[in-house]
Length: 205
Image (cartoon, rainbow, N blue to C red; front, top):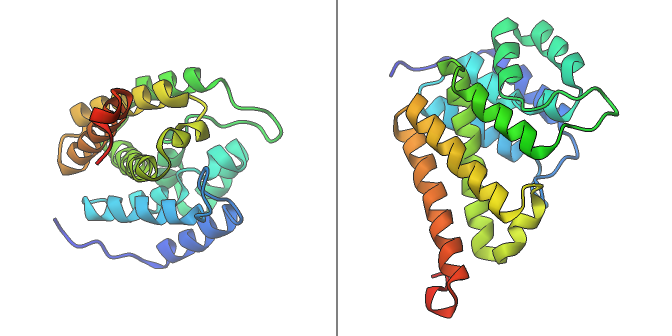
C-alpha cells in the first residue's frame, strides 16, 4: 500500500466538517459528532483510501444532516466532483431544508440496494462508517443494555437487521479486513443481545 500524502485540502475539509457539524452530538451521548467523522476518515486511510476518500469520509454526513443538495453543491465547489459524488452516494437521504426525511425502513432498503452497484470508493467510505457505528453500538450496549436501541428509529430488531444486512452486502462487494471486522462486530453484537434475551444463564460477560 503506497503512502497517502494529505494536502491542505484535507485540512480545509476537517475545518469545514467541524463547522458544519458544530454543536451536533452522537445519538444518545455527549460525544461531539466530529469524533465519528475523524474515526471514519482514519479507517479509510488505514485501509488504503486516498485523499478524496478521506475527505469524503469527513463529509459523508454533511449533506444528509445539514443542507441536502445545497450542501452538495458547496462541497463540489470546495473539494471537487469526486468528493461530492462519494458524499452523495453515502447519503441515504437528501431532504430539502425544513422537510422530513423519508421513513426509516424505506431509506435503509434503498441504501442497501444502492450498495449493490456502488463503486469501490463509495464502498470503502461506507464500510468505514458502518464499522465505526457498529463498534459504538456494541460498546454502548455493554454499558446501557437495551436502552441503546431507543436511540434508533429502527428499534432493536430493525437496527440489528440493518447492521446485519449492510455487513453482508459490504463483505461480498468489498472483501477484506475492514468488512471482515464489520461482520465480526455485528455478529458479536447479535450474540450478546441473544444471550441477554435468553435470561440470567446467558447474561453478558
